Image 1 (cartoon, rainbow, N blue to C red):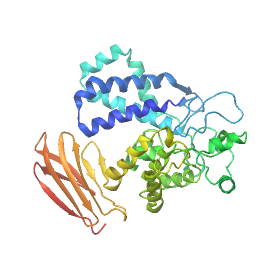
Image 2: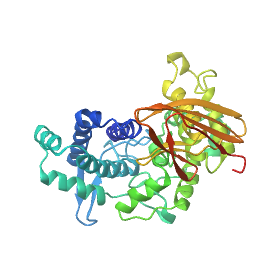
Image 3: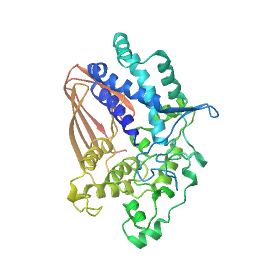
Image 4: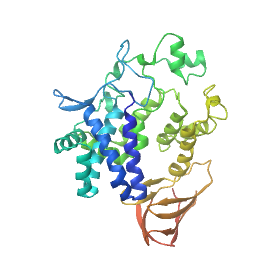
Length: 370
């Protein structure tokens, strides 16, 4: 019932295209997958006449602890916020891709996948009229009915059991269930803040008729941070990412915990089953993209370094849209070298300004004032 995985595949397709500018892949393979996923979601939505909005029922979000409503035998939840927002974004991008690739390829895909104009109109409607559950103070509710769950007695259980990362197992041993509480295994709503930056979220929510602000983001982070057990080491990675701009101390603590998770078997028995490769890749991703501030957008490769005090220097080489770029950053300076590439020019954004680099060009930027 974790249908959100489909949206994650689409997200990866789009980001691969953004990083590589591989229009052949997008046209020959990516668009077909993207359109197929969009068609799947179009078949899963329910139109609510009273709200005049589309909804998604019977799913499980990234949290994984909440699989049904309390005391219900029916599996699944309605309107998981993460899933609904991802589907709205996916529909927006599917229509964007349709306009990006050749019209003959679009006609071919529509014929092969049995997509007609009526379905394309449905995609557009979903992209603008997907329901997102909100509570008081602009809190994004994890799913419909989340506000009716009980608060979990975190301190009492920490004193009783010490380690409650796997809260589901603890509660099951007491013939209880996380389904009754506002307690998450890992990031769910907060996954949106990992996948999208503030400007992207503003655009997604604006298309849905909602305002989205920095204050809203911070309020949601604080709320769900206090209600997450980190039952997966991946949770440490996501929280390190989203907290880095707002609470570097806690972000670093999560990062350190992530690094030793397999070595010290912090979940008590899982290392014997194998290493958590996703968490390992996540720790590398934090170094490569969060500490260096690397981000790919349609107009440029952005580099906005923000090294933690514990890291003295980072050197790396990346391939961006057929260009090889070397980056070296410490607390005083950022050095960027456009070593070789498919074309003689490449746009690289540094801090808040886009610079056009020529092949072979090396530039150094002062970071001491940041």
